[in-house]
Length: 395
Image (cartoon, rainbow, N blue to C red; front, top):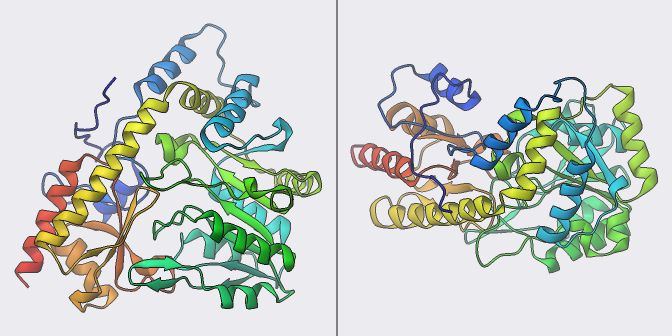
């Protein structure tokens, strides 16, 4: 069936975090303005999920008490990873958590000590910095190299940093948010070989691994081979893929028993939360009944990516969209406007009502960029780009 990705959804009074943020910035917003910031979708959830949750709630035996993972949920995760990502996992490798961000915060605490370094590659999802800095670990940055609009890993610097015994973990983003790279097998193996050589544990955030555009293929780091898997912790969830972030449901896959028990022990020490009964059910439904919906969303994101590229080329050449391989987040280079970050935000947010995420929040290398959420009806993007074009032309 063809799903409705065209209808606009009024969320100003719908308890949406990103809508609350822009309304706090300005209550006087023109019609058609939406936030293009926080990475959830301005799309209706798959009807199979909504109908399935209604049926579940209406079932006479459903009680919304404390819940562990049902067998049907675990089977759905195992089957989804096998069929969608060619990753055959054991059930006991799964550790269920209440969100990927809390999970990698836990992992940084569990697998490094105060004063040690946590490696990462900016510009990168900003909670990575908080995960290290808030717990007295050092942020050890290995900035990506921007080669004519395509980002690459700085291999010489990465090996140098990994060789320092004080740097014990790598917080890795795959696919990469915000620059949109889908790492190749060659890149992943080279990274893994360096980490194995220097005994660096790979904490791989793969929450966007279902959002890969045509012509690219995501490879789960842990599928590279036994040695890589045994020194890895993989984080993912249905939240980005199926727009379920509000249900706080995620899972961590840890093949090596000692590492897995260390993570679970740290969860127990701080009484970390687990997914809710509705989160388990929504994930199960998504992974078993909504794959056609997912394929159509990926097609929409690819359409929106091409629309943004074409519009900017024809009408706003000052804005340069970078090649997008994965995620639903477009990285836009605005440096030719020759504005500092405060001036750029004022132009975009204050004058054009173009509510994109400022690039500086993603660390070194984000200056002069913005990140745009493309998981929305194309008409929203058209309206936003038209406003931006008018403001730039009137400068």
